[in-house]
Image 1 (cartoon, helix red, strand yellow):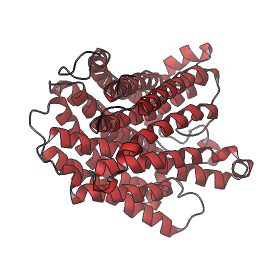
Image 2 (cartoon, helix red, strand yellow):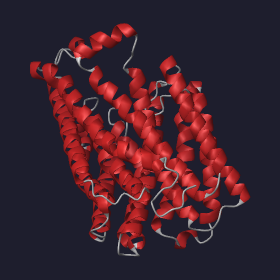
Image 3 (cartoon, one colour):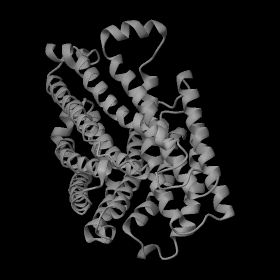
Length: 444
């Protein structure tokens, strides 16, 4: 461990490796739906659940690792690395790497939890949590003095560190018999913890966007503006309320549902305003980073429409459990979160080319993919309203056109999205492993 620069480079590399696993597993999942592919792989004992668990796990890892790399970059600006900090950072990176290898080794063997987002074996949560605590210790040692006078992205990261620890532990409440034996309590607690965990991760993404906007832009106060603090406040509040979107079908107060709806809509609207402000003050020579931030702004606008659909209770009942939900998740995780993180990676690797063709093709494929998931989900939800319960399990209620075209179109558009991301990944992996993060830095 040489210093913060080395730690940041390692996190960027880890994020790109995680993204590579995401692309490979996502491509496998997309192709798995094609009947001809199923007929080949099923006799080989290949199960769709394995690539899905790896896909969702490493998607979370991609977002968290790159978000932390921005945080570590800020830490490096505060002074040289001390001996204790060096040991803590080295330990954190080692634990994260061991956890990633553990997931890759155990999930194909069927050692899984069966839970959403954290599908790996619960024992692997231990190195993740320990690594997170070590990194949080380094962060707070430097950030706590004068914390409330710092740019808002530092406050976002500070709350994100605390929230992650609390909600990550809460995710494993299902290991308690009294929770696991009560399906309603289990479901409520799972989605409450998951919603707050997503909120913690979002704070790292928002912080990265503001940090990058400060570095690339012409406004030195972009991370101290009222709208930036409004995003922080609403993101914080939404972390406590957004679980309600996933529990409409459980016994729950209507007041909780409407609070969740209003807060979520407000957060997404303010996020759009903040991203618009960041993009507006960026230098026109920002290259690929600038274009990716522009894409994230417009994806935020698109997700507002999808979020309205998911948050209004009657419509939620119609689309809950359909393809609309993964469509919304894909649009948010790739369109908003990943565009911001790809912008940070482009800036940190010294990417000077705008890569217009790469970014345009990626966004066209992603738009088609997300749109098709919404179309299929709406058709599914409407068709099952009057369906015979016996037909629901086998999806026999689906219209003929949907049964025919659902998976082939998903395979084509999903593959197109994966290839769009893979083009950027293929360009940036050599740069990330070249021993320096940008052309202006000395080779380690």
